[in-house]
Amino acid sequence: MSSVLQTSTAAPARSTNLAMAILALAMGGVGIGVTEFTMMGLLPEVEQGLGVSTPEAGHLISAYALGVVVGAPLLAAVGAKLPRKHLALGLMVFFTVANLASFLAPDYGTMLVSRFAAGLPHGAFFGVAAVIAASLVPPTRRGWAISMVMAGLSISNVVGVPFATWMGQTYGWRLLFILVGLIGLLTIGLVWKFVPFHEAHPDASIRRELGALKRLQVWLAILIGIVGFGGFFATYTYIAHTMTMVAGIPSSLIPLVVALYGLGMVAGNIVGGRIADRSVMGTLYKVLPGIAVALVVYAAAVQWPWSAFVMVFVVGASGSMLIPALQTRLLDASPDAPSLASSLNHAALNVANALGAFLGGLVIALGWGYTAPALVGAVLALLGLGVAITSGLLERKRPLAA
Image (cartoon, rainbow, N blue to C red; front, side, top):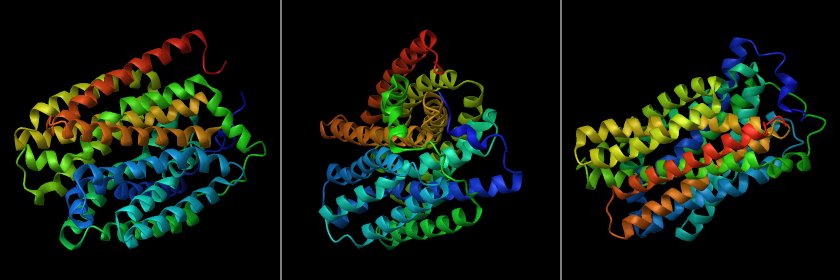
């Protein structure tokens, strides 16, 4: 099985150039994180602004996630023959324009369409960004390089999402999309200047990329992400309601809650990248049950403000530790179709987003309370562990290189 990814690993980038290239790619993650996660913290304001119910407002989050699921494999495959730098630039232009369209959306129906459109380039951008980052370092540092690109998503929750949440609460939630548009423009400039250009691999094609979908281990890795990460989103989608109605925290402190979640994500992402470089499957086996435990403790701890703050950090950390390992697993399972395989991780995570938001809204609608989504998430994490164990057992019989 030949690897498209191996073509540029022989000459790792110099440290300064590597840092700036990864920073440029990570900045796109900041914009994506702000538009994806701020909506969750501003859900009450969105409900009032559009005159819709909580579950209907949650559908805007699901629409974005559905856009990621559709766009990730589609745009990654269509862009297979493009130089990766050009593909990353085109996807970020698409993302920026779509978010500005959300700012102008006059009603709920139009907003649903614009959120779907904004999600289309999300997974494909992260996919190609991860492949670019992995190609700039030796194979033994792929987990680290991928985690640094993904750190943009985590850092957005420390700085961008709290600021956007405060701005939306104070001056109007639609300004979120202007902020994201500005971050998108900055990303375009940074990628253009600092990401190195490489010609597209001569064997790259839509057919070759789609070949990744024939492999069972690719589908199992996708399923781990969908099921195992669903609890993260079931909890986070309704975090503003849980903190205010269960923990009794004032709504003015929601930006602080979101920042704590983001700090946890940054810490978890860094640790997850390091341990993924040691053992990808070992990371999955340890992190998934850790997520389940964290969510159960969270459900109990949110009754009190001080413990709610602690567990918000812990849940953010435990969930994000999973991402670098899943990203690396998909690259390992399909080295000859890295862009599509890598983008599928974000398709999986956004199916998890839609699934988590749906199941969380369902148990709330059934009257089980705002802590119920975390308990549903714990069950999902354990189911994800079951899929990971199955994947590992099958790999023993037939290694990925076979």
